[in-house]
Amino acid sequence: MLRVLRASASSRPLLALANGAGAGPLALSPRCLSTVALITSEEEYEKATSNEGLSVVYFTAAWCGPCQRIAPIYAQLAKENPSVSFVKVDVDEMSDITAEAGVNAMPTFHFVKASKVVDTIVGADDRKLADYVRLHQ
Image (tube, rainbow, N blue to C red; front, side, top):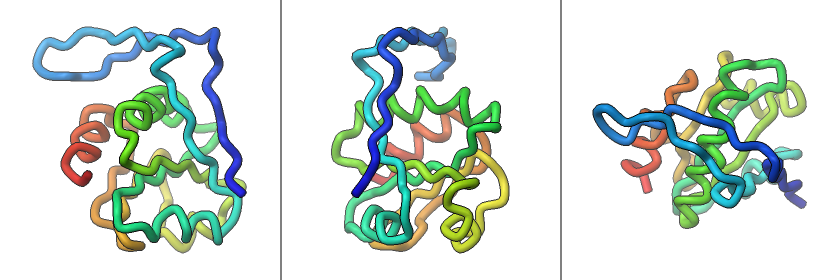
């Protein structure tokens, strides 16, 4: 069974999500923050990444500053793209999955279709993350 994380309703982070040249900071309201499934087993990971549609797998760690910075943007993308599966893998909790996926830097995002990684982003690049979600869905 998947555990679901919810963003705090009291948080209102300001983030610079680039929507084009000259885009300013974007205020995220609690309403636009979505739930993201947290992978807690290899079976969940296989199920989440085996569908024909796009799955965006976010490899993260609680101690990773850039991971914490991009987390609300990832949640917003999940809300804006309901046809895409957004899942999170804690690299410390799911070290076997992390090693098998070849992840050695955080954050790392894998774009997966039918169990095949079609693209990867290493680092907290919010513009690239949004662009790749649009490109691969």
